[in-house]
Image (cartoon, rainbow over all chains, first blue to last red; front, side, top):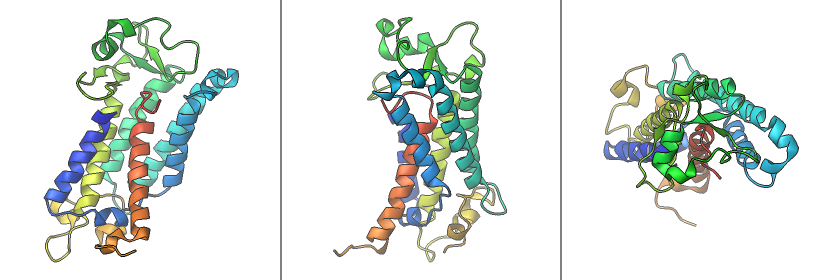
Length: 217
Length: 37
């Protein structure tokens, strides 16, 4: 988890170091954010007790998860195009989510996980055939027949990180996209007299998705 | 309650909280691992 959050933390610190301010965060516009939070809460409820042991959850849970991911994709798309230009960070987030969605749908609502990568993170004893059985899990073991295996969880986080996990390429893109977004909205908190708008610094394509903020509102 | 910066007013803090919560939801919900369990 920390490996996903750290890029955004460092990006925010970099934005502050370059003269930005957290005041830019209050101007950041995030359309459909309740849908995003709702989709996340649905995942939390779905994959934790007692819901994850319910018969209906075992049958429909993977596809409810797919629906939650589609909702997140919709939020990304909405925020990627709120003005005349596309927002790079939201497009990167969309790409990450889309790559994860492709492999999840191709594997019937589950993210395939590399046993080798899991062993590197949690040890050989963790890799048991029944590890992800008997309750609703969003992860299945990767096999030779797994479709889109290269989009699955194949990237082990360093074991020295707190709560290490195995990441997918989509996860990495998602973390990069959020980090770019937090950097840009932090930079937009600059005092107008001290610096030029973010658009002038990063080019017209790098938008946060908020025309009002970019106009210095 | 008096705050030192104008962006630290409760209404602004609520806006910042929306950004933080949404970013966390995007990262943890969008990533495909079981990070929240």
